Length: 271
Figure 1 (cartoon, rainbow, N blue to C red):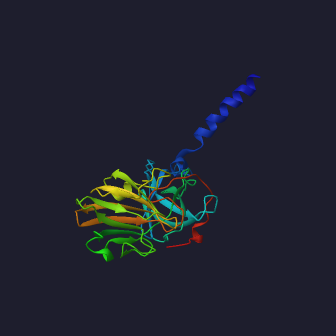
Figure 2: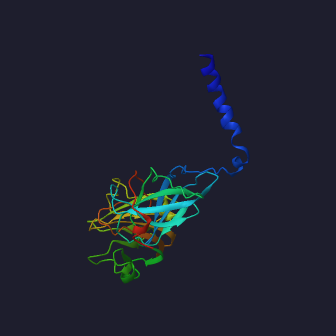
Figure 3: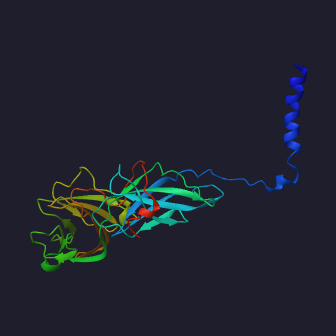
């Protein structure tokens, strides 16, 4: 028993003393990937989507890979790399929903799992500085058709919203009986309203036009749009707008979601 104990104590000494100068050549291999990114959000643009997330804090972080799928439970295709916590997908198409996930990678080439958050978004067209005239002054320039992105006569089959003032000069935005409108109140910008409300539509089909207010509209063919008034007088209104071309989709800016599997970077769908 004493000899066995002595032999076991001697082995570590032999191991430690046998290294000598070769110990300086020992290479440390880092095979630990960064943590998956968190806080993924997206912003709908016109034929594009911007993805943002919280920056990783690993000191050896090198960048991020971004993946997209056409469905939540689908396979995620690599679409690009970025060194910052933001990415602009210029390959998105208006009306088509995309699901985004992000990985982080370090200077050693280790890549994290897909983010637990999955952001989804449906790009939609938008416009700035549309001017409508009071329909009693110029009926042909008082209405707007979101599907054609065009100023139209207030009384056509495809007019989604029009502008008029009362005899006392009070300005209103008006929709026809087969559509809905709701004043969402003052917003700092049009993107402050991310989706259409489920209820609360104005039963009279009109809303007082107020500068700085954003309004959501459900069109006769079940599309959603929003406008934010930039300026308004007794004779005209100026507004910015966004329109969801995916029928029945209330999403007008930001979406969030969950996780999944990614496809190899060699299977990139878009550039």
